[in-house]
Image (cartoon, rainbow, N blue to C red; front, side, top):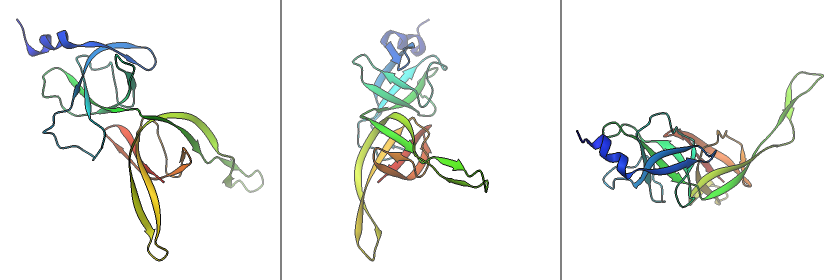
Length: 178
């Protein structure tokens, strides 16, 4: 007997994770009537799969034209036995550094050390904003929002900017850097 669950298999294509593992799924535009969790400026896409364990949040996948996407949660699927994920297209690979720390052998206290380079992280860089953190001097600060699969911390350096705000939403890291 035909059902929506079996009919969906006909529209699936072969999608690869960045590590080379293949799985079947469908990449579609998000429903326009949905209320977004955050205000992102890039077009939102969805990934639908039938197998629950093929993809998880923070995975990087490649579509058939080699665009890279960060996989994020989307919640319950209204399409029966399908699993839906939100996709954020990777637009940049940014350098990630964290301030290192060393333990002083004499006092046993931690002190600053050289920065540790963690390499390149895939990110979606969103619109910039302008904040005025100091009202007395009226200095402005340019901020950028990024979505990444990396586990950032406050104070990390991402591409010559410092992580100022940090949140985990939809299973991925959402950060504001300036």
